[in-house]
Image (cartoon, rainbow, N blue to C red; front, side, top):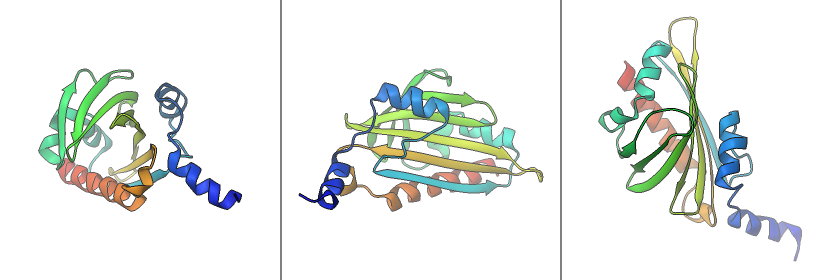
Length: 170
């Protein structure tokens, strides 16, 4: 079998590092999994100061009021190492915060359907004019993932989330 045929097949089966490694070696260090089948990054400049953006973004309990398709099932303190459970478009997710750096970054790892793993990073950058640049970056990996979910779908979810956040902080 040629390498060219084997490599796409192996990519279909990629599930990434263990969740513990993904959390400690990637997410907690401000990185996503570059080898994941899906990676995406989207940025939007918001007409709000960084403290207002952070306040809304870091208050997960209010997410269902401004983001469609999200339901928070279980949430304690928003701090590194704390777990939370939620649903995104009906899909149950289990997540754990990796970075909670007020006014700068909110990052977590998560799993869904038992075998898919993600790193979600949300990075805020205050701009000189009082606005805030928000970047969402994610890696998503798991067996056969590209057969039912693709990068344009992931990007569309990020861009919708950013637009919803911009409306919530306006």
